[in-house]
Amino acid sequence: MTDNTLSAADVVLARRELRRRKLSAFLFVAPLLLFLLFAFVAPIATMLVRSFYNPTVANLIPETLEQLAEWDGNALPSDAAQAVFAADLKRLANERSSGKLAEQVNRVFPGSSSVIKSTARRMRRVEDADLQQQGRALLLQANARWGDPEIWKAMAKTGSVYTPNYYLTALDLEASEAGGIQARDGAKIYVTLYTKTLRVAFIITILTFIAGYPLAYYLANAPTKTANMLMVFVLLPFWTSLLVRTTAWIALLQTNGVVNSFLMGIGVTSSPFDMLYTQFSTVLAMTHILLPFMILPLYSVMKGIDPSYMRAAMSMGDRPIPAFLKIYLPMTLPGLSAGALLVFIISVGYYITPALVGGTDGQMISNIIAFHMQQSNNWELAAALGSLLLAIILVLYWVYDRFVGASNIKLG
Image (cartoon, rainbow, N blue to C red; front, side, top):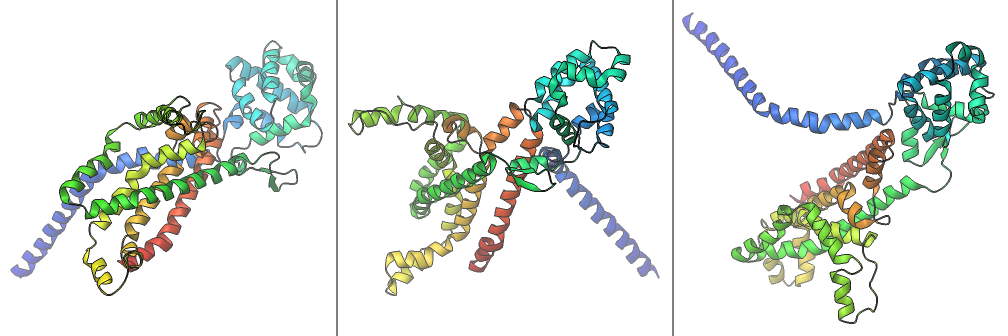
């Protein structure tokens, strides 16, 4: 009886001790979890929501949108709807919020910004009773474009709280009059930028592989003292500001820079090459900056490969290059794939270097996202572009994990 009682008490104490240890372990990682939540999860979630949720217009003119909900979209809205809108404009003018409405509607119907702002200023001086009785006439008197149904359609369109329009714009698409989806008129701006970004990232990945693989191989097989000294130079970029490294390339590649001065000095060319503010300068600078991200994963894998494998292959009659391709290269694929994935993903989202050395020709999708956030204030479109970029990266990572990752496991 006593033994059973003590055994049950021991179990209770053991469970309490286990819970205490779990709680202690959770408290140790809680700061990291909170940091990830506020610095990573919350911003991404906010971006995803903002890409399709835009209640700005709905909050500015709710009564007008209620009236427009009954409008068929063919002729002009009813006199009552226009009177309500005139009253809303007067209220927005008094609250100094008419500019927000003008900004939102102008994205859908270019040229409507000045119409809304000037009309709001005129409505501010009109009595409320006159607005209710002569709202339609006062709007037309303020600006004749209120007689165009398109501006009213644009207002009704921007009044939707949940909308796929920003994703359609990010894909160079638009909603048709029949309710379907069609390609936007004019140049395909954003799809072209996505394609260009992926192409540049792929080129940078290939160049870092070409430059980094031999160096990683030499580091892995060099004497310890030599390898340690060279590793300092590989790690040196991490100790230097990214801005400093980028501006150094500006000094090298500009018209009167070091490279052009050297080429003209040795007689290679009589006039300087246009190297700065091009796609070439973007690729060159980013390859230099991202090269360590390719070398380090390769070096860590190569360091663990036994050199006797190559010697055994050649002792059995195989030549160096075929032996390297059949024995050594497959064994370095885990490091190669990890380095390539790291360089590619970083390249896709790079912003500072293309902005400083790339100019118009060398800019990537990240620069356009920054433009919409900082200059055009179209955060919703920027969020849609960022969400699509995130989706592309996740798809590429899934492809890597599905095919390349599985191959690495088999090789291991």
